[in-house]
Length: 77
Image (cartoon, rainbow, N blue to C red; front, side, top):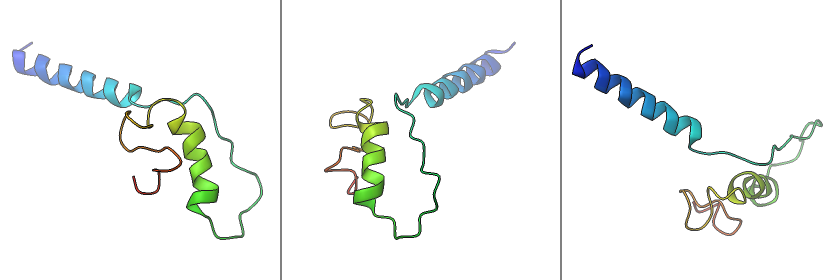
């Protein structure tokens, strides 16, 4: 194989590895089975999910990967 094909293959493999291993979560969030009939609030509904799944896993917290999804900074991030 030519050096160009080897280089392209290596770049594709590395890119795939970055996407596959980029973020991980420790906790699986199971959505409620009932239908939501009220307005969804970022603070009350989404922030707890982000905190449990993204911030506490060590990925998207202060000093970690962007965006910072800690409770006090998630909305602005």
